[in-house]
Length: 361
Image 1 (tube, helix red, strand yellow):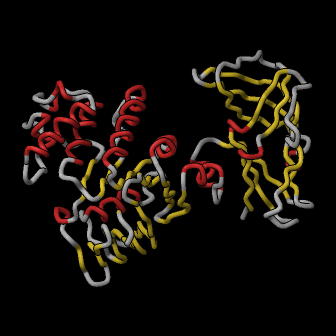
Image 2 (cartoon, helix red, strand yellow):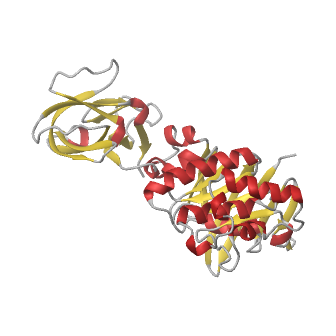
């Protein structure tokens, strides 16, 4: 029997607008499953259906092997009977209760053991000194940690998180995210989290479910999703791409780097090649060392921008294939500091692991 949350063939509409179209997913116990996709793709609606805040119109939902919702027969277990912990973007802490009482609010029987759990959680999440404080004196990160402890205090079967870090500033978000992930792993609870931030999904998730227009486009581990996207939409979720188009000839597509093999697309078909910004490597000069088997070309730096942890370069190269006779602008992201002079000559090549080919309609 599968432990965790199972959602099968879920369909849901608001009036004439169908927001979920035959969606199935699994959020296993002890793992964090992330729903990733743009705003309006149906992520939060799925979360509300799992929580019982919306009635399932079509499909089934199981928790720990027990059916809690059946759209066909109108079965819908009340939210408070599902054993679900909820945490939304605004944290929704009770302003009239102190931190300890906020966390303990949902515990039906506040035994000595559960009191000890709350006290240990306060220490573990670094908010013990605010035990008797009220929410309005806490920072955003501290409120987030208290809200997480409150959601976990009743020992839910699954924890549902809706954009839990979106209200935090960039500097604080990274640390709170890491502390949250470590604590969730220790608790061993099944977690289903909604986000539109691909970096957050890559960092947090054991399993990523990519959604678009009410459908699941791809589901897999972060490595599978990043390195083996099923289409251009999934590939481009993880950052800007360099685009090249052309006609496949003898299993090859011409690009500024040279011909790339794409045996999965038939000869004569129109195809596009996507290359990640970080998938393009740069060395100074026109005789840079290029790894064996990599296509390369030369070009000139048009602009460079230092972003702190990385540098963003614009490099102008000669076009090939569909861009023959034109100049093509490459967008490149390199780690660390790289600030060449405008007009400097460079050699560029593409990492085959960061190149993706798809047929065009």
